[in-house]
Image (tube, rainbow, N blue to C red; front, side):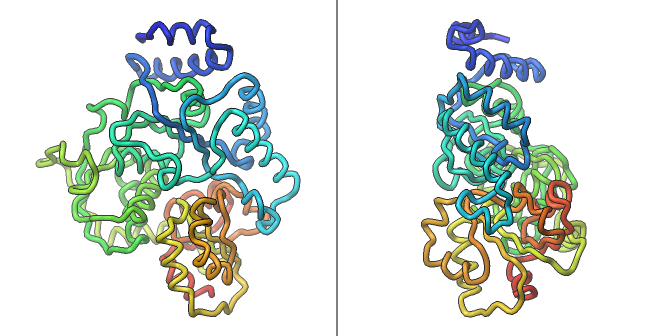
Length: 389
């Protein structure tokens, strides 16, 4: 692997122990994937923010790294295991809250922005087309690879943090032109709703695994794109996709003669049936990925004149920045449930309180059984609210 003189100096410890350990990790990963060198990054997005997911071992790791390391590129953080102000309302223990707040402190000490969201591209971490970045949230990295045309591999938490400390990552995989070529065409015949696109992502991920799809027949909004990206990353491991006449690199490829997979109502129904394991729920949780301003507004419009009839607990998960921008709509949603910031149902310890959860997110539908021991009902927001209000 070729290293510049500055990179050699980092490796030799001339920039400090923290940088040395970080670049050692990046180089080790690069060698595994036959990278020819390193590439400068413009930003990082870090996973490993929830105490539930990293535990005491991860907390100790952060304690050690933060002693002599800081990030040198703009870096944001994934959702926490709780709303830092409303954790008691989420049935979170004081012991959990204490360690979760310590995790935030450690990231802040390293210079990481502690706005904690799986949709940083909506607020304070927005890459440009062609930027090399190091992102570690599966749905977010898929979105910026595809909808924006930035370049990142599916980074792990430690790898993304190391890249943020060094300002570089290994130059392999989706950083290279030749690895961004689609290998299968998805001919989609679906409706326009966000949930339809979530099921489309579920169906495609189940079929193609980690291949790069090229979509025809859809023109999704940002909201539909993010939920589709999230579902494909969860049901398969899709990190990049192209949409005809929508995504910035789609026009670079001739897909004539490529394998075609047709996805229509039959395939969407099969995907939905796979996600559903229960009828009744104790918790309704929306915002995986985090709700946008438009989603919150549309939900508020739908609920404005309705009355709550049942005691099902309801969570609306978004970023603190979006919640602040949507104050009037948030007031309406708060009549029905809790609008929680910087957390979500997947990385919160909901299994200590609930066993049956309803959601409109195929991503959550995949992760709730494995990460939260939940049985799941997955359906469109309006249908779920009509049943469980």
